[in-house]
Length: 133
Image (tube, rainbow, N blue to C red; front, side, top):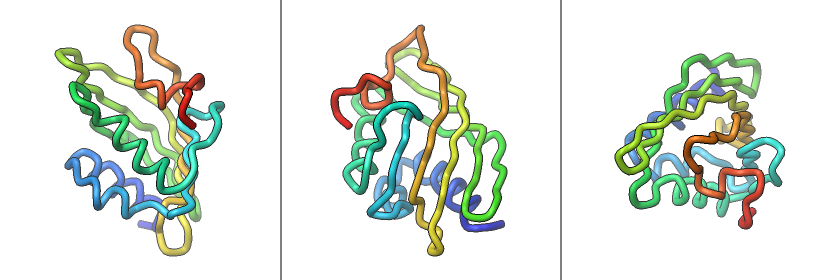
C-alpha cells in the first residue's frame, strides 16, 4: 500500500470520526481543492479548514465511503460515495475523486468530479457558482 492510498483511507477515517485535527494534518499547507472540478480552485490551509467547516454546519453531517481506490504513483483515483444527513434526510452524492500526495504523504491536491444534486442543495462552497473561493 502506497502513500496515496494511505492518505485516502486516513482522509475517510478521520472525516467519519469527526477528528478535525487529524484530518487537517493530512494536508500540505499548499493544498489545492477543485471541489467540484470546473469551479475555481480553493487554495491552502484556509481551503482545508473551510471544507471541513462548511460540511459540518448545524443540521448537516457527511460520511465518506471510498468504494474503490486505484493507486498509481503519487496519485489515487477514488470512487467515492458521500452520505449526507441533512436534518431528517439521508442523501447521497457519488463521484470520482483524484488525490495527489507529496513525498511525505501529505495531500497536495484533491479534484472532485460529481453531478450537482437537484433534489437537495449543497452548501454553496461546493458548487460551481460559489461566492467564496
